[in-house]
Image 1 (cartoon, rainbow, N blue to C red):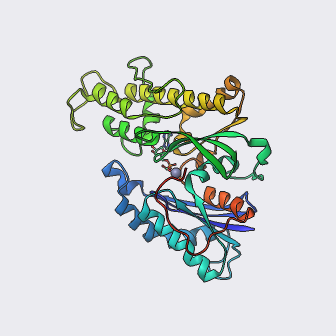
Image 2: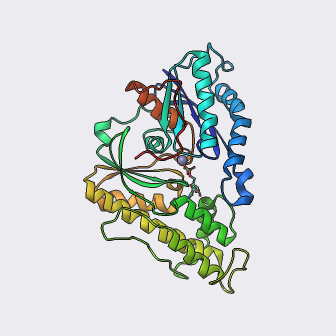
Length: 351
Ligand code: KG4
Ligand code: ZN
């Protein structure tokens, strides 16, 4: 059973080939970071155009990497899975159109996959050998799933790899977006997550402290706009613009460390609340920010403190990729959840 996965929801074009739901034969991703870098964020119009330019080459590259002949109707592919929601509409349309074209031309079943649910599923996969089948659902669920990425900060009560109920989300910026904006304020570059983390390593602890916005005592929601403003005021002063130089004595490394500490504290506290509220047996943390070193360290201790098993994807599967689309696609296919050629791209998050 070989599933072709296609990802193009935002600024990464991904094509993957997954055998029997767990052997990853190819996982090709190309990032558009150099294209969007100078704007400090993703420009939707440029993103969709860049997907169009590379998607055919990515398909060919994935087949080559898997040791298969070039893609064609005789390809040993059994089904085609595509991330059709949520995301930037122009970007989504490129992947969805490619998947539909292949499904029609090769006469293969088509599967529409929710990108956020696929991030959760990435915790069931391995990015490299030794591959092993995903754990049984009875072993993992009920779980709290926490998706922390550039576009999403969402807590779910999960009953299986395909059943997720939203129990908390951000009221303003997504956490990855907050990393990106803080890095821009500090002049550290883009994307913000990795550069903030790197700078934080050279930061002096206790130089500055930022607020932990926890909202109501029982709230599972998030707000990151306050800390972003706090970083701006501390680093460049009130009434400043982004071109205002750093205030005398302020080191970007110290600010990066304080920012990362505050954000990770909030993420851990909200996860703790969600686990207590739902009596989960597992906490799954996925998405680009799950690559964060400090967060991964804290999650290492979370098992002991909160008494739940923690599952985090391999680093290579935290940021956007098509392996997770092929993975959840395989699961949906097993459940008979195939789509017709009327499959739509949907920009909005499903609840
Ligand atoms: O999952 P992803 O590739 O895209 C979305 O679905 O949004 O996540 C990208 C986000 C970016 O905001 C990036 O700054 C953040 O993940 N990120 C990190 C790290 N690596 C990537 N944030 C914190 N620490 C990291 N090491
Ligand atoms: Zn994502």
